[in-house]
Length: 334
Image (tube, rainbow, N blue to C red; front, top):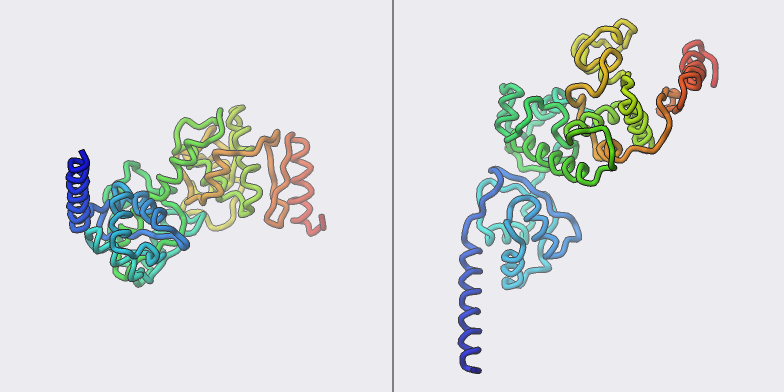
């Protein structure tokens, strides 16, 4: 019996060694090439392996964990932003991470930017290869594997790191995938009984919240007001959607005539949500859209200092407008 157990142990050991060698030298199948990913500071070997799985680089974490332990460098994995030109083997990936061959260039995609402004930033970045410069919006969406037909709001605002010469399509793909992942997670954990039918509708609401306030603490309240309006079939009546619908014709001054000019994005003339997002919402706005504040407020008005006064009745709202807007226009102090 003991001899059989010893032979089995030797056999299993041989099989394990054989699998480790096969795994180490077999090229990985990346989601796309070139491809960038980030390893967080302070990560353990187990955490690094999990991050590589989450990034779509590894199918499972254990083989890479075993490989690193066998090579005796579990404590030498370096955090940073990495860029893969082609499909490396796990052994090549291991050497890259232990050497710290991190990328150097970066671009920040800012909350509240629309798709046109984001494309402008990509086109102006000298370290980026501008493959999409002459592409239509539809062409770009097809190239990055998006199923949507309109690009607005589909990209997660963040700082993206890359090696010089990376295609703008690669950055757009990463930003799109980041938004898909964030939005899916937020949708799964959303509050019950929200008046959204799809994650995309939550994204539309998040984009409106993003443009309505720069105060992080106010976002849930802004969301709560709009949720209340949707529930009673009251029009959203939000200026940022009107401005978006005006497009290039908007000169920076929103007039009463603009509020009456019907477009698909005019929430003064049309009920419900507009047909699509109006900007890139940040994580705070996405969270507010799916976790709005519980409030009776139906109105809000800017105080002139970046914050808002919230009201639950039209009478209260009109008094707030008189105090914070009409008096300010006439030069009176609040």
